[in-house]
Image 1 (tube, one colour):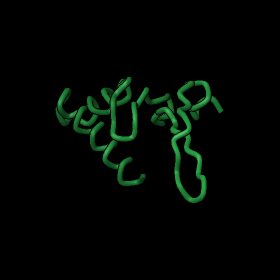
Image 2 (cartoon, one colour):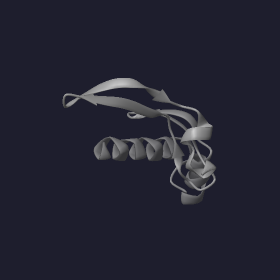
Image 3 (tube, rainbow, N blue to C red):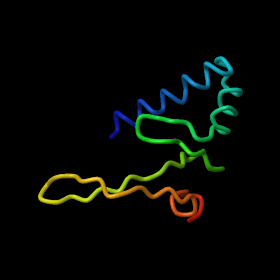
Image 4 (tube, rainbow, N blue to C red):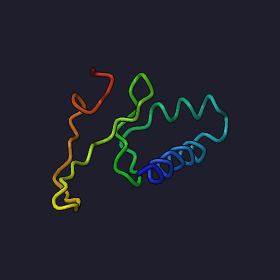
Length: 84
């Protein structure tokens, strides 16, 4: 999961550079305003005011040592850490 998250971070950086170049302030503003951006680990819904990425959370069950997809939690009121 760590590798996939790093890949996501680079996707975000490359998207910012593609759209606004390498000016760090413009990149910061662009990234802060990103919404509904598809990444390897799912859709980045947005960044909250604290800078945390808000993304749907995949829920899996572990049965007899095997992971099984159960569902996705995508309600921003639940998954946005700024709400707690």
